[in-house]
Image (cartoon, rainbow, N blue to C red):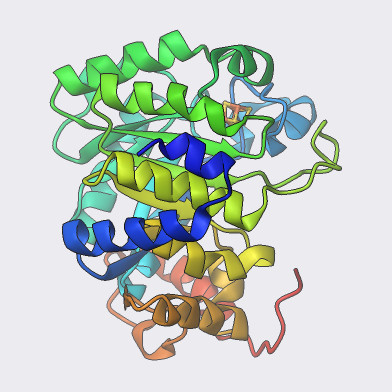
Length: 335
Ligand code: SF4
C-alpha cells in the first residue's frame, strides 16, 4: 500500500481504520497522559523560527535566571506520579544546567516516579555521563525535510542530531524524535521522516502540531488540518507497527484527540496540566479517550489522587501550590 499516496488522495478514514486495528493488536488499548517537565525557560540556540524561545532569548541576559528551582521541578514530577501520568521527558536546560546537574535531577525524579526518564535537552556530546536514571534520548528534529530543516532550525543541524542519536544507541539508550506538523512540510516529506526512523531504529516519536506564537513568522499560519495530522500519524503507525507514538494537542484543539488515538497514538501530551486539571477541559480529554474506545491510564479529573506523602520536606510548599492550582474552583479555563 502506498501510504503517502493515500494521504494525498485523502483516504484518511481508511488509514485510520487500519491504523486502529494495528495499534490495538500491537499495543493494546491503554492511552497514557504525558507531561513534558521543563528545566528552564532558556535555550542556547534560540533561533528556531517557530519557537516561543526564539522570541524570549533576546529578553534573557542571564540563562541561570531562567532556571526553574529544582524543588519545583521535583514537586511537579511528584504531582505527575500522583495523577498516574508519565513524564514525557525532561526538557530545556541546555545552556542553563550542566550535564551533572541534569543527571542529578533525573536521578531524583527516577527515585520519585520509579521510572527512568527520557531526556530532551538539546544536542550534547556528554551522553556518557548518564546512566540508569535515563531511559532514552530525544532528538528534537521538528522537521525531517533537510532543506526545510536548515531554514527553520539553523543552529541544530540534522547531522548533529543523528550523530547524537547514534551515540545514544551505542550507549544502550532508547531513541526518540520530535516532529512538528504545519511548518510547511508536504505529505511527500514523510519519506525523510520514515527514512530517519528506519535508519536510526527510533523507538518513540512525538508529533506536535504547530502552535503559532505571536512574534514569530508563523503568527498567522493556521494549525494543520485535523485529518491531515491524523493521516500522517496513521500512515506512520502502519509503516512502523511497534513504534511508540505520542501526539500533542493544545487545549484549543481537543477534538483532535479522538482521531489521533484512532490513528495510532499511544499517549497524548501538550496540556497545561495544572490549569486544566479538574476542569471541563480535563473531563473532555477523558471523554475523547473513552469515545476512541480506549482506557486512560491516570486521571485528569480525580482530585482524590492529589494529596500524598511528600518525598522530601523541601518539596511541600511547591506541592501545596500545585494542588491549590488544581483545586482552584474554576469552571472555565481561558483558551
Ligand atoms: S532548540 Fe528547541 S527550544 Fe531552542 S529555539 Fe529551537 S525549538 Fe526552541
